[in-house]
Amino acid sequence: MKIDHAKAPDDGHDHAATPEPGPERATRRQVLSGLALGAAAGIPGLVPAPGLGREPVPAPREKIAIGVIGFGPRCTYVMNAMLGLPDVRCVAVADVQKSRRESGKALVDKLSGNTDCVTYRDMRDLLKRKDIDAVVVATGDRWHTPASILAAEAGKDVYCEKPCGLTIKNVRDLAAVMKKTGRIFQAGTQRRSVPQFQTAVELARGGKLGKLDTLYASVYAPELGNNWLPGEPTPEPDACDWNLWLGPAPWRPYNPAYVAGRWRNQFDFESGARLIDWGAHTVDLCQWANDADKTTPVEFVSGKTNITCRYANGVKLVLEFLKTPFGDRGPTFNSKVGVCPVRFVGSEGSVEVGDEGIEVKLGGAAARFEQTKRERFYDATVHARNFFDCVRSRKATITNPDVMLHSHLTNFAASFSWILGRKLTFDPAKNEFVGDAEANSLRSRPERNCWA
Image (cartoon, rainbow, N blue to C red; front, side, top):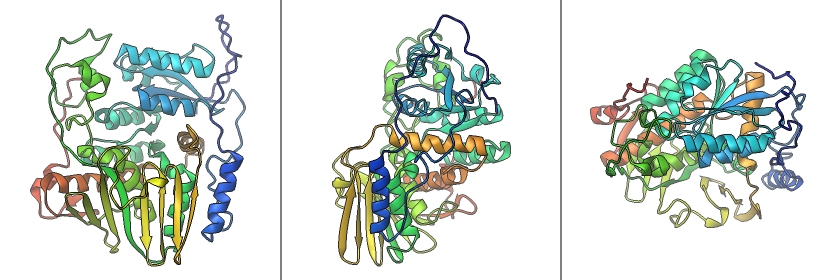
């Protein structure tokens, strides 16, 4: 690890200035809430360890140096959380859009209290720097796998936003490279690090719900998109390097709406027919609850309002379509628990949990616990804390490559069932669909390499 022991440069900037206060790791109320949840569920002392301030804090100058690849709204959220940690500093931002890299530097400078952050148009120039320990990959979906692989091969640890790849081949390659290089990897599915989701999973895995029967995950209603926008004059590369922006995706004429965010709902640019954008979180939690982090369901059947999957152990996974990203949920879900709801149902009870609360039903009695106010940045902070602790310890993260791979495989297989409109049988050991050449052909897509 490259630790910064150097003195602050005498460049006229106030390097001793105090950065804006970062998010606290956990409030006293959250710690007590975790204890209450554990007691109510019959799990004494259940307070998830990540984020409770138990870890020793390194000396102020022993900071992990990170670089950012791709800067936008999600990265803004994550950086606000990461740079509130005492042992992390950001030294570089790479983005193909000048406006994005400049706004990234402005935020980093503001949070860091200095102007040391350097900008790059090409992420490969950032990856050449020997003083960078880890990178945050927060590009659009099409770049998540290639950027993460390039970073790992350059000797960097990787925090990658979800979905981590456009295809089954992408995520398999990504997991293989992380294993080969020995780099630390964290998928940005941060709800695994949040206490109420951890409590719900512990209820399921610990047998408090009895024998598991059905897991419910909310997902965006799938769609293929690909409504091409009219071409407009391509800007100068310094303003927006269109060839690098496209990267491995198929070429199409430039339109400013794409780089402003309209790449979403475009199949060429987005993973899993939109379904995986939310399913990366909710399906991941269901996989965890079923102790299925190294496998997937074996059957997938798509319907009008959901996709029903079955694991080899008989447990069902139902992906319920949301009509809109943050509202109009199907009848399965109780909106009182908030956004990103999942529900685990067993022979002795059930638990439903979302961003704003958790409801437990055991033995006919219901007890609901909720956060009256969701703390901004808390989820990303505790997830980032896990990542940086593992960067130091070299232990596997909570959303390591195996976890990422199998939750993504489940999402992709479910989306293929919807795309093809038929039942699919999947062999998780071989990573292939049984007797279905058409489904197997969807595991990869043609990729451009002329950006290299």
